[in-house]
Length: 298
Image (cartoon, rainbow, N blue to C red; front, side, top):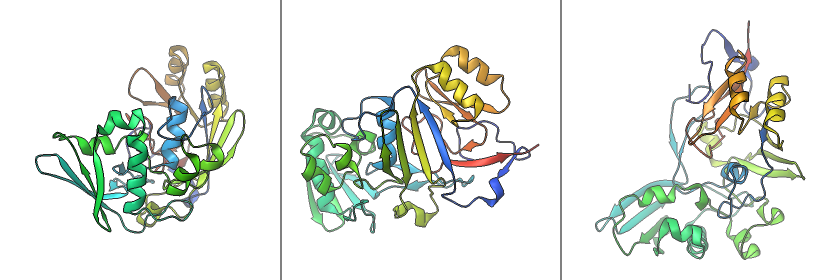
């Protein structure tokens, strides 16, 4: 069982009727609706959660749903340092495409790297790195000074990969219309309103062929300003996950046998129905490709 959700007793839950991937909706209550899904401009927890599902960083480690303990790498097959940690070579996974059909090739990575390095947020992570491509599957980052943790910088959610078409159209922060079909991630933007965002399963996601999900069809992000109302929605079952609850609500979660808490970095925590599985503990924002649902039994 992947870490994160309570109630992992095998006698108390079962997979819902042999539930097939992509057969469920999960509603997630947030303090506010995501303002942007552009990973480079995401500033709130809501922004970062939504962006992480659509845009993948080059370097990541993904889990799989249904209790599968495997861990799997992301768009980068390998990231190798040389020259005393001043040169980093990133070999790309073949066959990865953006949701608009554009291949994730070296040209796409270089376009993203130029975008990152043009913004303060990207510069803070990458410094003054230079980027080029010595062959069709390899991207090379050359640093002015050694950095043994440069691969960790490439794993930052802020550096989510965006389709070169969207980068060219946007010229800056991605607008919602420009963000459609512009990531490589397991979900894509489907609907957006004043208090709701709906993400749908990316049926062409490269990870699906490796058994990495997504195991739900839709992820609904709802803005509910009051922590008390978020908890009430969770308890009554209209949402399955509630974020940013206060101490009083979390105490009530602890006394409810059908609810549990997923720890997050810092003071916050997620409260979830015990039917929810696969939210990785301690990751913010989490990748939700491995999110899945069970059915509680007597």
